[in-house]
Image (tube, rainbow over all chains, first blue to last red; front, side):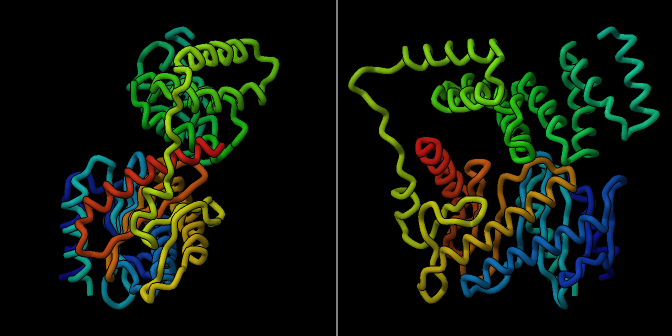
Length: 114
Length: 264
């Protein structure tokens, strides 16, 4: 499945404002599907940086990197899931989304994002 | 402000969305009770100026008027992160605390506001009123037991940790997979994560962050911000349902918040 098809599926979920495939190492956008007004490069850089930080935490505890993280804020959320080959799938979503569904779909997409 | 003035500011903002007129415009709409419109204008301003304490203060007032106490609290605590001496935020948080019946917390915010503006008579009068209200509700010989987060956090030693924003340990502990204490290293990592989360949510216009959940490996994690200057990490093995872990973290954060406020 192509990245654009994968991201297209994710952005069809209610409340999703943008979906990106990002290089985890340098935070560069590999593919994106964004609503107007969302800065893909900023999302990619910030998500990759946060992903690196959370990986540092679990490494400190002798554990593998998280496969999924969800940052919840008052007006929205940012979610990340690790894919193969150093890729990170990122979603920007509204605060009132079905977080459980989003999590499942993102994890499934990350498995296919090889 | 007249309707003509509001229309003029609206037109000005439409011509130049980066204009700071969103501040008087949203305030005027708030004062006229047009809270949906005020919220839309203020939210746009906050997204455009995520480092401006005054924009979040305005958002706090609008949220408070809408009866959205939690969101007003978030807005005003963000103000204090950006500007710890912002009197408006201290007043706003005092008001929210008073409305919630949390007089001790209300007094702390009000006293700080009076320290910052010692000549403001209305603030001093408010402080006196709240002191009387709080005092009148005390029952002689009865003291509310001080909550002890250590008891809540350390029911399972090594699975919950409370640190300040510099990563210094406040309570609890965290062990690595070999069972060795890793609290200090985890505290340092949490300080970095907090800065990164703060930066991401602010720059993306998502508002103040409240929760970070991590999954993968033999354990899952939940990170909370019990107060504006503390972080709480709770972990459990992956077979504990994520919803239950989130609930545990919420409860521990509530207890930690009370404990920290008592300490101060």
